[in-house]
Image 1 (cartoon, rainbow, N blue to C red):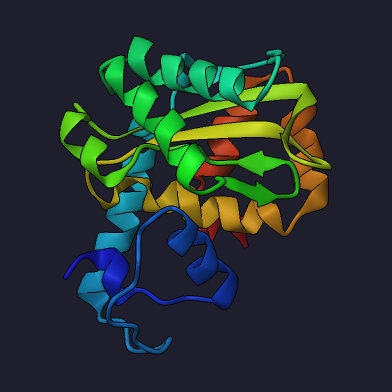
Image 2: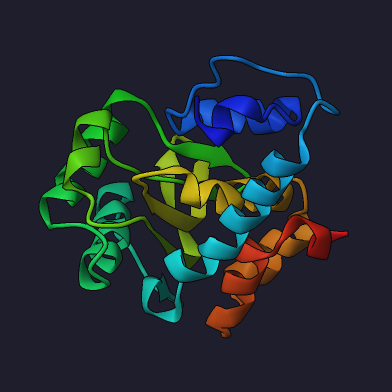
Length: 195
């Protein structure tokens, strides 16, 4: 059982993680963490600095539609050496099955389960679209966060993203920043740094 399977934090995180096809099989109530699990989770959060870098953040981008935004997000992962070009096709196929729009201007395109075997190593990309792009009727995405994960290394980014979704002021900052390090820092922040 993976570390993610052992963690069950809050309902919004559970819903968020299910949307990324990471289903929790054996939920455990909060407070039943062992020190080993907490240490493992902290190690995963530290690894997120390696999976989200300046190379995978594109500021002030423009996209004609969500397909174009997904392609750009995937291309950042390709150029950084996280995935082969075929993975982008998997991201597009995944979007046809179920929307990856989370709400509050954020979408998280990622490949299908069959695409996992093609991932070289875990990576996260961020496409900042200050003008947004229509993702669903009446819904615009301003931050497109591409995911390619071979293990639980991206859990820290997802956990931080759940917090960001609940902070409209932070979302506005990330949509309009001209500093890629602000995005990287906010999405890779260790949980004890968030308090």
